[in-house]
Figure (cartoon, rainbow, N blue to C red):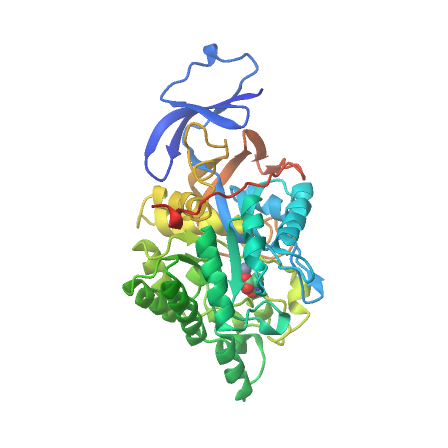
Length: 463
Ligand code: URP
Ligand code: ZN
Ligand code: ZN
């Protein structure tokens, strides 16, 4: 069994910050103490001096689409490339998506995804299982899926044209009831498809990238959230809202919470820090994702909501296409939607929250690690610096300033949507279960070393 001693780092958990040593034996944290004497450890103990560095629990990117096959193509970052972005970004676990495959049960769909990811991922992973149709057999399928360690399902209130949307309200209600019964976390992409169709029907404008924002305005998000939130309230169950993008969507969250609906809310760095002016240039296609980028006022409203605790998770919706794929169309109806972001997550959020002095780095850990671990039932194995937790450690230099650009990040997309942004804080080393997977700007991840992390009861169902 290997032994690793990380000496004298500033350990940052969600609940505390302390200067301390951390001992890792095999894949687990086994001791945390102010001074652990190396003389008492095996001779071949690896010793890492973390003076001046923060030691964070490995981050969890709770919303990724690595190797997404969609619209006749596949994303640039498959499992191998996505894992590399993750390691450079201090992300040691991703929660990715399994499609509800045609002619397959939910268990078959998630098993196939777990199988494919197990062969190629170099960081750990859990799953959200998409549910795109309802029938009387679905409750039994959900129960079997839960036994396999998938306790979170994903729904869309849009993308009817590509078969992702459950159309009938009664079916959504039945699905929600089944999920409540089984204590499954339901996460939803909220955009009202009917309103999108209505706007499209009377549209007189063009279809350039910038038009994407007007074809799917924030009212669409408001209605989508209200729709699913009202059903969840009636059923009496919690709900997880993915990638909240707008002030208007936040209105819906506030209204539902005021009625007592239990919502966990996720946003992404692009809705916090980028606005629709990015869609204006000749490279506007690079910034097309769904929901679209909004106004600067929306960024500011989400930033405020992040600081005051109305948003619990920041994840990336990493869904990368190469520059060539993105720029192959300038028609927002056919541009492949999605952008990369796993690697940029920590520096962007750390810069906004902690370097700025707005809140502490513990809040960063909560939003990017502990919060998602709890939401999806993988805490405290993940998301914590506790004795007994997986030794997923991020050695982080909090004061290093650098510039995000296509050369400094590792996505196969060949660009970063945050090109030119100055950030403060850089990942120096990333350990996955006690093994170094990134250090000194070198990637040491091994495809196939990433393991599936079975999810247990999501926190929203704790008494
Ligand atoms: O444009 C996006 N976000 N693509 C990924 C799929 C989704 O809707 O999350
Ligand atoms: Zn989505
Ligand atoms: Zn997504």
